[in-house]
Image (cartoon, rainbow, N blue to C red; front, side, top):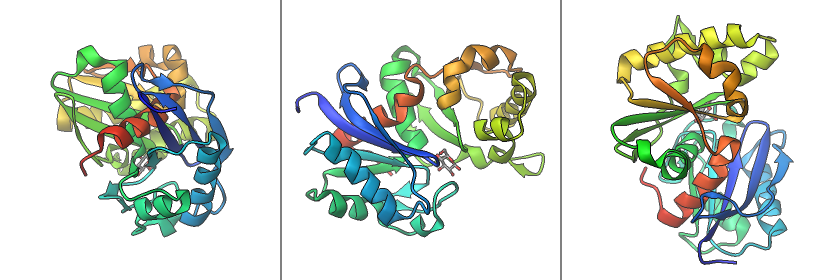
Amino acid sequence: MGGTRGFGVDIGGSGIKGCVVDLEAGRLATERIRIDTPDPSSPELVAAVVKKIVDGFEWTGPVGVTLPAVVKRGTAMTAANIDKSWIGTDAVAVFTERLGRAPGEVTVLNDADAAGMAEIRYGWPGDQAGVVVLLTFGTGIGSALFLDGKLVPNTEFGHLEVDGLDAETRAAASVKDEQDLSWEEWALRVSRYIRALESLIWPDLIIAGGGVSRKADRWLPLLDVRTRVVAAELRNDAGIVGAAVAAELGVEH
Ligand code: BGC
């Protein structure tokens, strides 16, 4: 393996997924391995799962890893849906050591930033002009902001305060499940959230990702917002693909 192949691991609040990625086509090159996120989702336990996944493919090259957290120069700065002990952890150092990699072979970035990198490169390559936002609706709400295709990392728009509440506690996909909301009820909340975001950054395009993007036809038509909203082309694989792209190209943050 090698050449146009890379490796991505996407760490989420409920599962950790990874596999070999075809960097030319921008899609998974193999079946992915998914393992439940350990409880507690501490750096040590999560790193052990990441190693298991990487070793499962006998992959020896560079590895890109996403975290559901703000990541500044390889260090996790927040931890909304993972164990708080991640805060201040040098994630690059943890994974580099656990995976037995040389310095520079492991890249760590925010999960939504990774998904956005993949979507803008492979999913909607013709729509990069202007301000594009990817929003991932999952356990939380993640965001990735691009200006003419260039990432502005760690935007954290999921934590925008809307009607006095942290937006992701009202409009994440997990809330739809927990509160058993209908598509109509949930779409009202998502619309409210997107309108708040629109009034601040006036995007030209919004790409809706996360697991719930698989069912985009159920809820995108219900949205009442100004901006054109399209479904993520890579669906839930965008994080893995983007992680592998980041490992190949590097990421500024
Ligand atoms: C976190 C973000 C993350 C998003 C999606 C939010 O709670 O603060 O860093 O991108 O969830 O996982």
